[in-house]
Image (cartoon, rainbow, N blue to C red; front, side, top):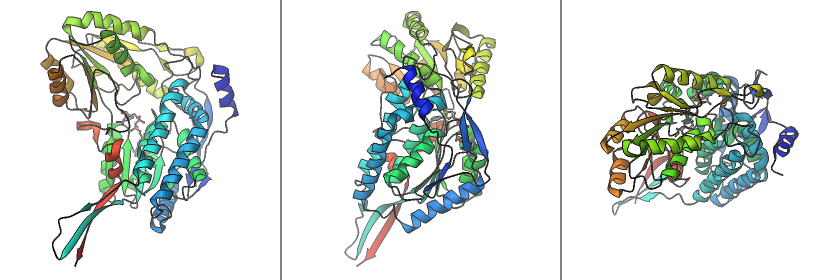
Amino acid sequence: MTSLAHFEAVAGSLKLPGEAVIGGKTVASVSGKTFANVTPRNGRILNQVAQCDAADVDAAVASARTAFETGPWRQLHYRDKKLVLFKFAELMERDAESLAVVESLDVGKPITNALKGDIPGSINTLRYYAEALDKIYGEVGPGTPSRFSFAVHEPLGVVGAIVPWNFPLLMAMWKIAPALAMGNSVILKPAEQSPLTALKIGELALEAGLPAGVLNIVPGFGAEAGKALALHNDVDMIAFTGSGAVGKLLMQYSGQSNLKRVSLELGGKSPHIIFDDCPDLERAATEAAWGVFYNSGQVCTAGSRLLVQAGIADEFFDRLIAVARRIVAGDPLEPATTSGAMVSEEQMQTALRYIETAKQEGGALALGGSRTRVDSGGFYVEPTVFDRVTPENTIAREEVFGPVLAVTRFKEPNDAIRIANDTSYGLAAGLWTKDITLAHRAAREIRAGLVWINGWDSCDITMPFGGFKQSGFGRDRSLHALYKYADLKSVSITL
Ligand code: NAD
């Protein structure tokens, strides 16, 4: 069953979605325009997708607003709301294999990762917020003998979600599940590189019974559909995951329009610190390698700065290289593949440019450094490691968003903490030590929204996810994300 031939057969049998989902229907763009959706697996066109612009966004916002005001979702009994979201999750589970194949083709990610990570993670997210929606309580104020006061969480109204291409379904679900659970209407703008699973779940939501207009999907380009959504005067919030440059634009758009709320999950340059007393060098080396090479490095929390203490640096480095050598880029639809393609030719060229810069700046290339699988026509880059990178070097400062690791050696724990914090980002950090005092001190002193001790990326939907500094603000995951999509209203009754 689980062979390349099987997944190619699934891919061949799929009818790929290409229309927007607006007002409870799948529709072509108002202009009739489409764009070619390319698979990085082999550089070929997968299908044509509706190229939405301001006219489509207007239609989606109007339908979302009508749904919100008339209340078929907002006012639905919480018991029934929950049933609809559970049904939605069940339909995603029914179609899990085809969703995984679509995600693998659209992004170039290994099918096994999509099957074991992206799709179940998205379903789990939806169930988590479905289960939470009848546990939203307000507060009762102290009041007086002549006044009774309480505060309630109310949905914001129309939420625009703009997401990137690296985990298209999961990033979308981190936003739409809590926003829907809170009773909002949502308009999702998927990334132009990977719109397919978003379109597919727009259809599944309707099949599950989500009322028309409550979840709309507008595929298209950032400068057209994304900008129109963010500038719209009838959108109450933009929840965004993507680059810092676009995050800054979204705040401008908010100021230029209706001061809509903005939450930003932006990039990172996450440090992964290995202290001399690391409890398990082999496991740390494995996690350091996968912490940066998973999804071909296209992960906002990628541990792209590896800081290794001098006492163990040589041994650790050898182990790391041994693990990384075993990561070989392969066909995304081959189940044994652990490293697939980069999402686009543009993203691949960006990674290759950073590799050239690192060489010019004196980084010692220890592994990889080139494009690979060129004959496939796809966009593959070898796992690449640079040793003896200094904190001033470009690859130690800028987000590559590709399979490129910068290794820096340090002497004292305080040096590591200083280097870790010497960045404009603050998304994630990891550290390995047996010393509980050092672990605790470093965790508190590192300015990052996520800190992992003795295990990279060791958290799940129950914990808040987001950044400090220019990695953004606002949190995805956990109950904090649920309340992000609500306003707090104080009501006082004079008795
Ligand atoms: P991007 O910012 O270019 O695009 C993200 C989304 O914004 C896309 O849907 C795009 O169409 C849209 N967009 C682009 N220009 C826009 C505009 N002017 N107005 C409105 N929308 C616009 O980022 P990307 O290249 O797709 O993704 C990579 C970046 O995302 C990296 O910097 C990465 O670190 C970050 N990222 C962060 C997280 C996180 O949770 N913090 C997760 C994944 C990716």
